Image (cartoon, rainbow, N blue to C red):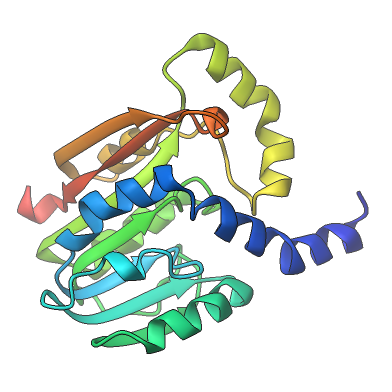
Length: 214
């Protein structure tokens, strides 16, 4: 596919496909389990089209800052954001360079974004920087499959899948990335994706504490 076509697809098609796919029941069930745990000043990295918004607890959230580099996705999130009873601010920025002050956030939320962020290690460094020492990272991610057969297919599909799904990598290991960044995993949930999302591999959710609070 030519570069012009790829650019058009990335702007005009991929955001809507990702929004539709990530609205499926498997994703919604995991969001329902952990997103209500967010509290205080919340920064959501990889805000996308705002699919987490219905699951935040208005009694716990003071201010939500949604960060995403994709203007189309943020546009999809706009109507949902304006309907909430707490303050919501959307910023167009990358996870690797968050335009936020040190120690601002009580909670950072990342859902299905470490697979897409070009430099997840740098993004985790930024998350550490903006979290308060007593803060928490809430995450939901997919990643490297447990079975060899599925892992093999993830490697084969990875390049094509990335082009179709907004740069998503099928075979990253989110738990290893989080640990390597110095976070302590305090809660974990694991599962597997059923059809038609088998290629996404393992399904992880949990809460992690930054090094100062570990």
